[in-house]
Each structure stands twice: as C-alpha cells, then as structure tokens.
Length: 157
Image 1 (cartoon, rainbow, N blue to C red):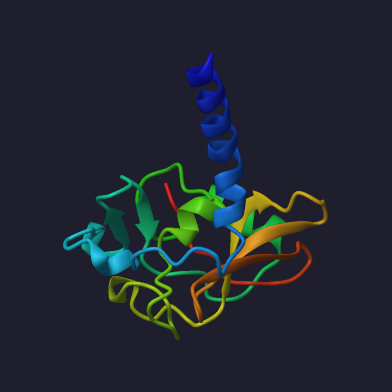
Image 2 (image 1 turned 135 degrees about the vertical axis):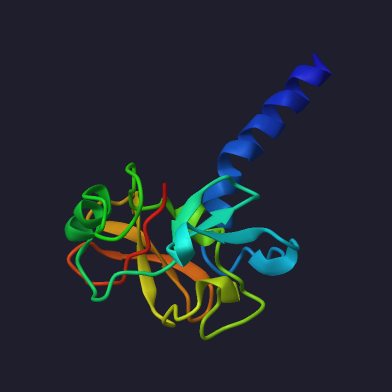
C-alpha cells in the first residue's frame, strides 16, 4: 500500500512540474548550448536540427511581428523558403528548450544567428483564456500575453 501512495505522489508531482517549470524564471536549467554538438544546420543553412529533441527549426524568423492567429497561419502555410512540409508554431516547451538563461540579448544558441532579443509566440494557450505563452529571447524566460499583441515567430517541424 505504501508503494501505491508513493506512486500517486510522484504522479501528482509529475503532472504539476511542467506548469511550475514553465513559469519563466523558475527554470534555471543548463544552457541550451551545454550539450556539445546539439545543433546542426541543414538545408543550406535554412534549418537547424536539434539532435537532442529531433526537432527541425527554422534558422531564421518572421521578418515582422504578428498576432497569435497570424503566427499560427504563417507557420502552417509553410513559410516561403522553408523546405518540406509540416511547419508549425512550436509549443512553449519546444521553444523554451532553445532558450539559454545563462546568456542574454539574445538568450539563444549562436547557431540561431541574428535572433532579435524579443518575444516569440508559441502555440500554447494561456490557461485563463485570451492569451498565449511566449518566450523572451532577451532574457530566456517565458510568460504569457494577450493574443492580439504582436511578436516574432520561429517555426518548427
């Protein structure tokens, strides 16, 4: 019976942990660049493979800011110049995995050269409605904002 209680406590912690970790400043994990050889450019420099997660990232980013609805559409419509299909707006966990809170301005691996120290949209809605998560590549933290605000976009597949 004791092992069942321990299992339930661990399960409850595992469910609560992602929300706790994603509240921005609470996650001071190792920098994104801490794993040697984690990132590799592909497709003549248009994309970056994250060997840790298996995700393919757009090396560049949107040339202008856009609201949340336009950001989701922009990625889904396979931004001009990106190879293949399946491009989408990343989740907050996915985009936050690129953040490097050990550096700032920009707080991201140098392989993503030219990334502005600005907010980038994620597809993850904010639980209270009317907002969505964003990641700040000035500091490497995440928080939320109303979906009518405008921010940059980096697509993933």
